[in-house]
Image (cartoon, rainbow, N blue to C red; front, top):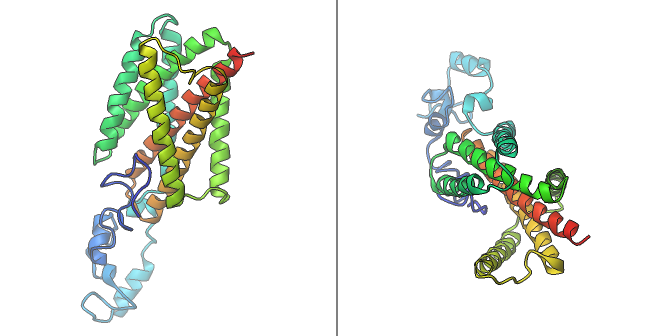
Amino acid sequence: MRSRNPVFSREGSFTRDNQYAGFGTQPAGQQAQAYGNPYAGNPYADNVHGRQAGGRPLTDQQLAEMYGAPAAGPAQTGRMTLDDVVARTSMTLLALVAAAALAWFVVPVENFALAGVAAIAAMVVGLVISFKRSVNPALILAYAGLEGFFLGAISKAFNALLPGIAIQAVLGTTAVFAATLIAYKSGRIRVTPRYTRIGISIAMGFMILMLVNLVATAFGADFGFRSGPFGIVVGIVGIALGAFFLTLDFNEVEEGIRHGAPEREAWRAAFGLTLSLVWIYLEMLRLIAILRGDD
């Protein structure tokens, strides 16, 4: 099944045409060798109902050796597990939070130059990661650090105007993540082709709307997309889209594990989840600012 998440949709990602990077198109022995199976290349890898690759029955000694061998777990096969995804995502978020804390204490409220540079650099690195065929953990951690630095600086600026807003946005993002995960795991949300098409269409419209608003703002116009009642509606839609992206991330993680994606792909999953959480946090920050500004 081809990935529906924009981060994972390119060639070389978790799954493609019901197979992972050609998984299922090679003989069993070659598959085992390609995926790090410790028994790759031996006659047991092609055993079917007690026969070797050439159709010869296994000897008693071969059967004894096969059944006495340890079971191949994730550590032996080198395939991605849920624990791998959790561990890599934790590392990525830790780098993001550490960089945010650094910016919070180092960057002055009135100086956005460094934050702007970090934001642009994070965008560039994020695009490189998205279009790069191979997974590069260093680039993903670098993205997390740059994005975290930007978030720390902008959160400090918001917090100077509206004390406590940063922790409110963090709690709100956590609540959205937890609620989305529960809804997805309970089956209340199902990632179907129709669901994905509708969500992507809304997301594209939303991003075009924000781009138009950004250009208009640069020329002194204000359409009210980020203020007043309409701004509140836009903020809620933005958060809902972030939750939508999370469901795509959850689905791709499940598909990657089901199709035997290599362990290194856990880094790509961590990158996708981090992107979605950053989106939700920024939209939450803006929405709370509008709500508190209207009080």
